[in-house]
Each structure stands twice: as structure tokens, then as C-alpha cells.
Amino acid sequence: MSRRHIRLELAREPGSPNGDDAVGYDLVLPLDAAHRLDAAAAESEPDQTRVRRFIRNETLAVGRLVRDAERGWMFDFPGEADDATGFRLEDEAFTPGEYVSVADADGVMHPYRVTLSRPVDKN
Image: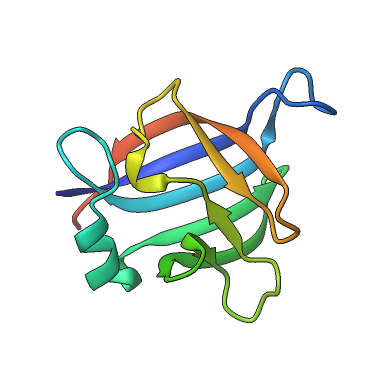
């Protein structure tokens, strides 16, 4: 297991035919050797995860990844009403070029492209 910094940028979708690299999430997640979410590590140490939602270099919210029994993996933003839900995150490979689906607080699913995956410094 290694913690990695992952960047998700809005991919092509109706209303954004070219995607939008100014809209997305920065994640710090534990990944296994296949670059998939290490679910056991994320569940046992949620404070070691980090989620930052951004638009145009502005941080909109900061939180962590948590597992909800009903909704699955969520981007939990404490004090915010607009948590997001990842679709089958434990099945996704977080490698550049891959796609990840995230539902916003209204339940609308959006595709995001992984544009960065690098180890987090241990210092």
C-alpha cells in the first residue's frame, strides 16, 4: 500500500464537450500495487485520506474519503451539505488516462479523468 496524490479533472460530457481541466478533485488515497483503492487501509485510517474539490485553482471544500453503508465511498466535506459519491471506486485504477465517475450532492453523475498519480512524500 502506498499513499498517492491523484488529480481528477472533469472529462467530456454534455455541456462540456471538451471537458474542463479547471474543475475537479485532488485526492490523497492509499492504493495497492495495481493502483486500485486499498479499501481496508482507507476504512481503517480515513484521516490519512484527503479530498479537495476545486474550480479554477480555488479550493471549494476539503475533506476525506469515507465509506457509507448505503452510498458506498463518499467524498465527505465536514460542515458542507454537498458531499459527493464515487461510483465503484474500489474497482477503478487510478492511473493517468483512466476515468472515474463521481455523483455530486444532487446525485448527478459526472465523469472525471485521472490526470496525475504520484507518490505522496513521507516526510
